[in-house]
Length: 308
Length: 263
Image (cartoon, rainbow over the protein chains, first blue to last red):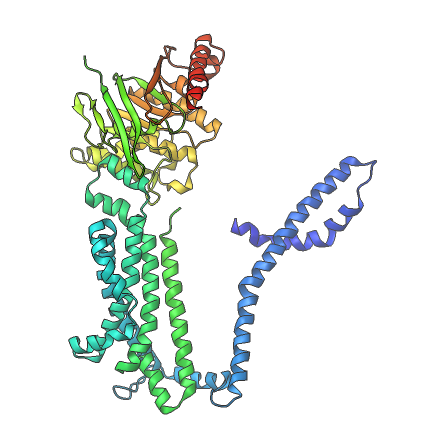
C-alpha cells in the first residue's frame, strides 16, 4: 500500500499536464462512448490528483511544519537574546562545538566531559528506573489480578503518588547515606507509580473472551500468565514504562542539582554558579534530545508489541 | 442407555440491582451421542446462557447437568467451545492457538511431535494448512472462525459447543462453513450443540431443533426432529417438501407464537 503511494507523484505530473483539461471539453452528443471513456479518464486523474494533493499535505505536515516550528523557535530565541542576559543561538552553537569537541576529558571528580555527564545521568536513571520496573510491574500484576490487594494498595498509592519527587530525596540521603544512592532512590520512588497503575489497569482490561478461553481449556495458572495475561497486558505495561521513563528523566536533573556528582543536572547548576549561561542552554537542549530519543525508542518497542 | 448429555430441571437466575432476574426455568433436555442439536430463539431468550451452563462457565441456580454420567461442575477440556467472536489469541499464530488446546488435553501423555501432528491435522480438517503460521489478524473472519473450530475439534471433545459460530460472517462464507461443518461432523462423529438465530442454519445442520420461548424465564417451547437424510445438500433441500415444512414450523414458532408472547 505504502509503495503504491510513493510511486504516484510521477503519474501526477502527467495527469496534470494532459488528461484533465480535455476531459472538460470533450462531452459531445455524437460520441457518447468517447465521452464516457474521457469521463473515466477524468475520474481516474481526479483520484490521482486527490492522492497527490493528500500527499502534498502530508509532506507539509511532516516536514515543512516541524521545520517552520524550529525556525520560529530560533527566531524567538534570537529576539529574547537581544536583551543581553541570554546568549543567542549562534553563541550557544559555538559553545556547543567546544563542549562536544572533547566529550571524554576528565579533570578530577567534578569536571568531566559531556559524554561522562550524559552517561552519569543515564546510569542513575537506568538503575533507579530498572529497580522501579522490577518492583512495579510484578506489583501491578498482583494488584490487577487480586481485588483484595488492589483495595489494600489503593489508599497508599493514592497518598504517595502525588508527592513531589524531590520530597523523597532527604529520606534517601538519610537511609542510604550517600548522594548517588539518594538520587537513584528518588528516581525509583517517583517513576514506579505509572508502571504499577498501568500494569494493574492492563490486567483488569484483559478481554473476558481471552480469559474464557483459558477457563474453557482449563489452563494452568502458569499458562494463563504466559500465554494470555502477559501478552494481553504488555501494551499497557509498555505505556507505563514509557510514562515512568519520562518521569525519571524529568526528575534526574532536579535530583542531581541537589546531590551533585557528574551528571547533566549538576552541570546545569555548576554552570549557573559559573554564569556560563550558554552551557546551561546546551544542557537543556541535550536533556531534551535525550528525553525525546528515549520516548521514541520506547514507542518503537511498544509498536512492536501492539496487536490487532 | 443413559443419554450422553442430560439437562435436568435446570433454572438460572442472575442477581441484578433490581433483584433476581430469572433467565431460564425448567429446562429438561437429553442429547444422545453423535447427535447434532441446534438451539434457536429470539435474542435474549437465554440460549447462550444455556450453552454457558453446558460449557460450565456458569453454574445453574437449580437443577443439574450431566455429561456421560458425570455432573458438570465447571469448564473442562472435554467440551470444545467455538465462540461467536472466535476468541483467538492475537499474539499466537493459528498453529499456536490450536496447539495451546492440544497441549492442554494431550500434553501429559504424548510427545511434542505427536501434539504438533494433531495440531496440523486439525488445521487440515478445516482446510487451513496454508494459514498455519499466520496470526489471526492476518486472515479473514471466516478463516478465524475455522481456526476456532479446529481448536475445539483438536481437543477431541466429548461435546462440541458452538455459540452462534457463524453469526458474524457474511452469507456466502457462512454457507460454505456450514457445509464444511457438516462434513467435519460426519467425519468425526462429534456430538454438537449449536446456538443460532438463523432458521435455515438450525434446520439444515440439526438432527433436532430446540426452540426456546422468549425471556425472561425462558424455557424449551418446542422441539423438532429433523429426519432429513445426510449428507444434506442445500441446493436440493431448497425445494424439498420436508425441509420446507420443517423450516416453516420453526418460522411459525418464532414469528407467530413467540412474537405474540413477546407483545
